[in-house]
Image (cartoon, rainbow, N blue to C red; front, side, top):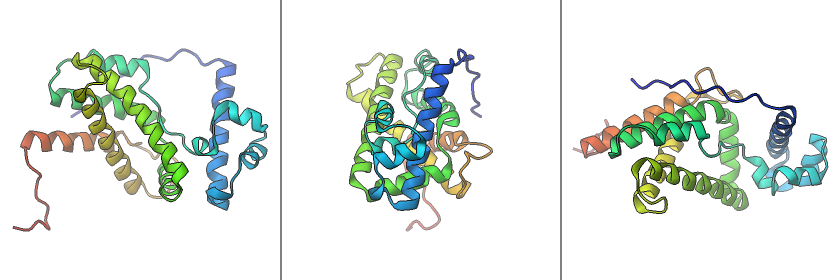
Length: 224
């Protein structure tokens, strides 16, 4: 059974940093609320800024566009988690995927949006091309960073096929875990009692089992 590893205590957050984090969170929450109420196409930067109590100039200090403000997706692995993975034992595919699943689950346990927020944001992205493009660009940036972390562990080039494939597989597995977590948690705004870590680890365990077996396990409706 895989368990979370204790993480080093983060340095105390300064007042300025806390205010920036709170302002960024407020702008994101306001953008999502207005999109729910009016439809994303009708929402403007001016509306968001007014509702959040800041100027449009301040808005652009935090986000380049209203599309970017819609997302509060976790970014790259924090340095402590990236180092923990890079310094782990084993360079075989199973060990790499096992440890990737572990650190990504720990990261998303703390940083993932709530189930309803995740569902609503992805629903908007599916219907608005500019939002979808922003979402994909953010995912690609995280994936590139993850490929670099994989390369540190495996001793392969960060832009090589091995690192890129492992990072891509890991991101797809995370999306599967988050989707299952969202479906099982129901339409709530909170992150849930358990968060997404267990679902993400479950998806990585399924992936590793499939690779080890070398075949897809037949379901109850499989044609025999």
